[in-house]
Image (cartoon, rainbow, N blue to C red; front, side):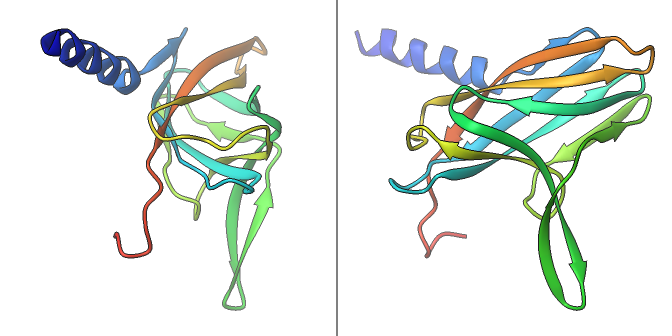
Amino acid sequence: MVKLYRLGGLLAALLLGASVHAGDIQIERAWARATVPGRDSANVYMSIISKPAATLVGVSSAASKTADLRTMTHKNGMMKTINVEAIALPEDSRMDMGSEHGYHVTLVGLKAPLKAGETVPLTLSFEMADKRSVKVDVQAEIKPLKSATQK
């Protein structure tokens, strides 16, 4: 029985670590941190690989009221989060959305806290260079919330 649980855990880890493909767009390592009760937003990070030129034009999630594409600006020694309408992906590019200081997705109005070990669904909307619309469904892994003493 223990071997069966280990096999199930290994299978789940492989599936969560796998990338998602839709045509020539690939999403890798989508993840977010667990949230504490009462927190109504969370950032989601990932890498997007696009063979043709494309533009990420939107994101949605059933786990939140809205989902925004965001980045940070630095001006006069101050950092400010701003919403962006779209993120351009040049041909044969990789966009690492791995930090709140660069591009990322923010889920706003969470319907429930994000719990470690679960996933949160996302739908990414792309406009391809030939004007086709492509939607990619992703399950972002929820990682444990770090304590103040962890680095």
